[in-house]
Image (cartoon, rainbow, N blue to C red; front, side, top):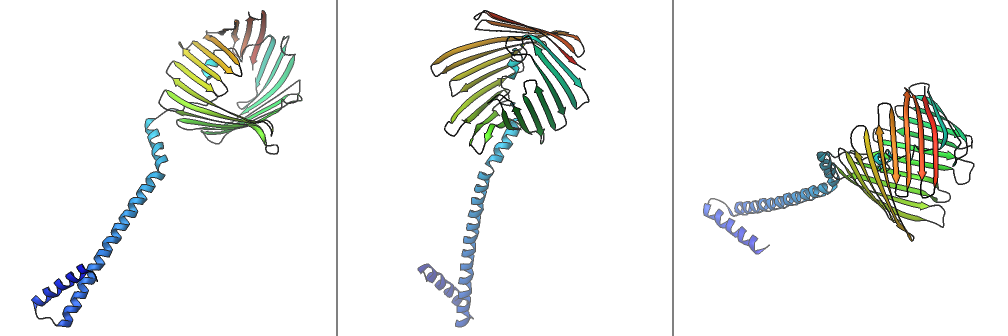
Amino acid sequence: MSHKSKIFRGNIQQYLVSLGGLSETRRVTLVNKIIYNKMAGVEEKNSTSKTSSFNNISKNTWSLKSLFSGLTDYSKRLNLPNPGTYESLHREVKTTFLTNHLFDGGRGDLTKVLSPNFQVSHNFSLGSTITPPSYSFGAAYVGTKAFLHGTIDTDGHLTARTNYAWNAKNVSKIQAQLSSTPGHSLLQLEQDYQGPDFSINFKTLNPSPVESSGIFIFSYLQSITKKLALGTELVYQRPSQEVEETNKSLVAKYSSSDYIATLQWNSVGTLIASYYQKINEKVDFGTELQIIAAQGRREAMCTFGGKFDFRAATFRGQVDTSGRVSVVLEEKIAPGFSFIITGDIEHSKSTSRFGVGFQLEA
């Protein structure tokens, strides 16, 4: 028994003696009972303190576990917009360029809509100084969740593409190409997820578990403010077991109501800066600067393009620092029928190309 306990017991005994009328046995019983109750109260207090400490630890642990939820709630309160996909960073600028509109020789595109969900197309080209004459047949199905498209041409190239939307945010994509030319066959698997203020994309090209080869690409784009988005892309290439390469890209995109500025840097030594300006509902301008500083190369190219929409026509023009000037005029003669004229001059190479085509949809 401790010294404090002895003093406590003595004080109780003296108090009971002063009361009188109690036998010695009765006084000892009361003293033991009082001491027992005192000790039980101390233990209960200690137990309560330990329980309180445990609850505090649990609360701290729970706060760490809910950190991600807290960040998510904070992001929702900011009400940031979705930044779009990584692949569409320069989409607005590309609409003013002629990359997908320029051709030479003659070309015809005929599309027949068989139902609201199904259509077929016939495409032919001839007289080109770059590619031989060709014909291709295509079919497309568009459903509420699925998209299917396939083409086959006279060279034996078969391409197929399918998209399936599991929900409004999650889309799986498969693209395949079969060719008799060695090295031209392709298989691409892609998964795209669109969050409220971010986008994630993963794709693989020609994956081969047997040979442990393929190309794997991961990209992430996050809105920081209502106008600024930052992102990154990681690319891992392993064409064979002996060769592998990894590179990364960083990107920043600033979007306003009538202009978009984008800056993209690649670890291989490439810098791409683009700027898109919407003048009004009918006039768009875009410019792009590409700088390459890798493997002893020091090159730069600046391209400027514009698109003008008239009542029954669309005009596109493009010029770059290499001295190349290109134009495309699409005249809408009747609903579903368009006549197209293209021209392309490269002053540095003293070459020129000219094309005429039409598009018919029935």
